[in-house]
Length: 115
Image (cartoon, rainbow, N blue to C red; front, side, top):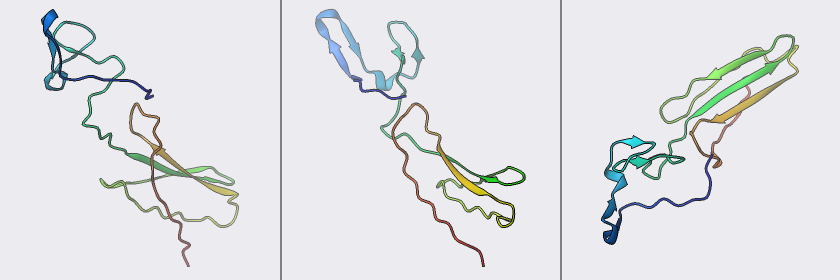
């Protein structure tokens, strides 16, 4: 979950003999003088990649769940067979998988009927 906050980098207080350049540190820690303390933060280059899980749930005499395979660009195509008799409805479920964020994920989908 993301919250409003502040993260400071490249800080120095010469009067106290303190300086920290957290973005060049390679170690993460929950304590210590020379390591970045990651409590509640993740290190990022301001881009949090979004991946998706796309599934369709077909409700009828039997409940079926089909997962759409996505490529590196997070695009895919799913052909659903036998949506005629006995099917009450189909539910498309799109889940954003980016960690530690509550930001809305944008995506597009289209539905084509086979003839």
